[in-house]
Structures are given as C-alpha cells and as structure tokens.
Image (cartoon, rainbow, N blue to C red; front, side):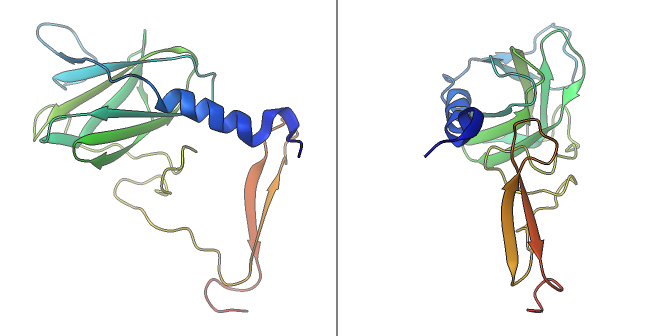
Length: 174
C-alpha cells in the first residue's frame, strides 16, 4: 500500500521521536530572570519542524500544579499554546512546534507561581483529547448516528485532514 508524501508512517515516526526524549533535569529558579512567576522548569530540545505536533512526557513532584504549566521557546518570552495531561507522577505536555529549538516548560508546585490555567488549543494532534479551546472543557466529539468520516487534502498542501459529515441532527438517528 502506498502513502503519499510519507503519510501515516511519517507522522508516527515524528511522534515517536518527540515521545522518546530522555527525562529532563528539573531546574530551580534561584536568582534567574524567567519569563513566568514559576519556580521550576525543564528543557525540551526539539528538532520538530514548524506545525509538527509535539508530545513530551516528564515525571514531576506529587504536588505539581497543572494550572501553572507554561511552554516557552528559546529566545522568546511568548507562551506557546499547550495542553497538559496530569497522571501522577507523570505529566504529558503537547503543543505545535514553532520550529527546531529548545523549549522550556515552566511549572510550579501547589498554589505557587502561575495559578491560572491558560486556554488550551482544541486539539494538537498527538492523540490528545478534544478540549474545544476553553480551559476545563473536555469531552467526546459526537457527530451523530450516521457519521461519514473522510480524510481529504482540501488546500492541496499535501496534508490530509479528517472531516466528518452526518445526516440530520446529532443523536436523533435522522
């Protein structure tokens, strides 16, 4: 079977490269000037190209505060929109790469540092749950009883995107 431009196998290999990063050393703030109020960070050096989904797994202390997490690319002070899945003691952080760089993931413990969760992107593409782009809102995506999924390249950029069409109203079977 032939997949155009690497297709699914290229995506899987790219995701495996991001997942298999070695555990990072956690740094403590000290007197350093960091772009957040958080007191801890770890580095995630990536070679992922712009727009590539990234998934980083790290073991963090038991009192880690998932709302405090911020991802910032090297030589930047801007926060990269990211998603956090916390399954003690591991955290999974996913985002879309802004290009090859060392990203710093800032976090804190309990009610210290940054305490307001940022709105996560609706879906990064690493197998993450759909969050609808709003903090705290998650759920299953429903398309109704007669769904018709299809993968198409609507903008001729070589990347297929999933589209789902359905007849009638969601859940009514029409």
